[in-house]
View 1 (cartoon, rainbow, N blue to C red):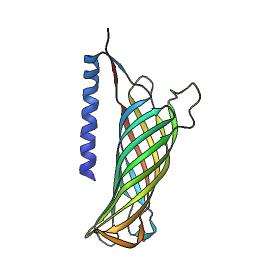
View 2: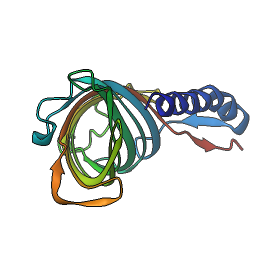
View 3: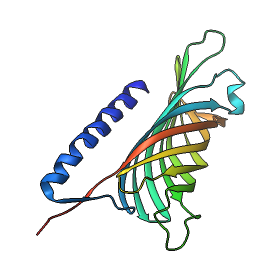
View 4: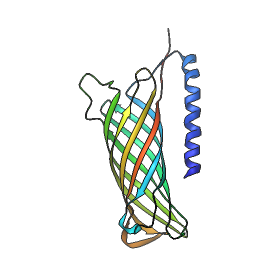
Length: 206
């Protein structure tokens, strides 16, 4: 988990550092509301699944997201997130992670005012790949993600700042490659705060 977050942070930092110089080289820099973006967030998670039996503690969580704002009121995101928890009784560390395809809706944008700075949003997603790793065992399954968030999009900059409350409804269906008789309830609640970067559009000056 920590290695993945560090790698994502290095990648995002490199993009942020190189974009202004590239924009200066190419021409006029603009940061449109609609288009691609990258984001990185950190926070805490609480494993709430009934099959954890209260044995997993709250822990740190992180997320890397690559998205596309299709229209001002709708975006699609590919997200990788995860969190670490301490297992009660000295049982070591558990890691919950998943790969998500999320739809983010912005239903509260005022007509003709799509550049509002504070933008509430709703999240609905699917996780075709979910993992739970504990000492000696690896669980695999799937999930559904529901939640909401608030984004602050300063005008005149390519950056945005985000806060999300996400509930991952996770069901683990196999353990070490063997199908379980009944699915394992691995629900996880996440609170994440992050920063993102709307990828630039370059207009060649004539």
